Length: 272
Image 1 (cartoon, rainbow, N blue to C red):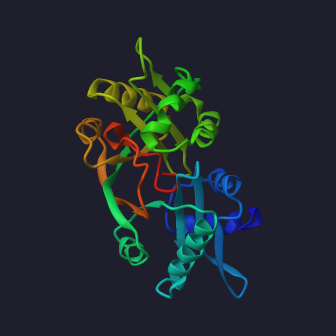
Image 2 (cartoon, one colour):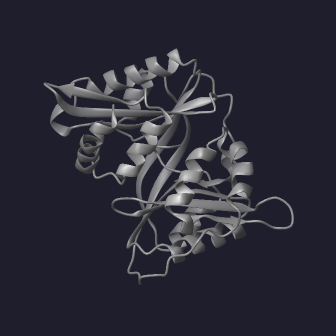
């Protein structure tokens, strides 16, 4: 895949009604330009897959898209196999992704196993325009602990998010270590909260309220961990409704699982 293929990627994600933007595609290509692939039929792009390597600890596989009329022809599996081959050539021992129920059997055949369950929640509301605002708290304080929470360094990605949507960056810093933090993105259809990290229900609630106050979109989506003790309740209390399930999966030895007990919501299926 090259930057010239981004319009085709956008076309495929629109057909799937996904939320990514051109900027997201550019992030994939900037992070691992040799690890993003397209499938073509008679010169026409009909499928995509992206990969992003985090600190050589593990890689993320995302944006597995196939044009509807070309599905069930093995194109998705071929793209995944090409991505896996590339990552193996780079010496990456563990690969991760977030699977839909439809994609999960395909990934299982390629050696992926389940790690934990994720739920997408969606809020539709009426909002009033708000004034632009800046990040609240030091981004560096969040980056300091995010490596431990996520399992690998993704500071370059989080810094890019903080530059494109600074109003969604909030870091709660008591006298000692941070109690939690959020980042977010402006998608093509909705604002997306994530990562949403908190070491307690109080900080989790405060971070969610701040995000909702700083978002001016009618639709907000969150991908929360099903096992988190308070995320689902906070989302329901704020009017969110369950949208669909996802499964975090990995292939290889999962040496760096991070600290999922601190994760209210992940960054997103395309990034991890």
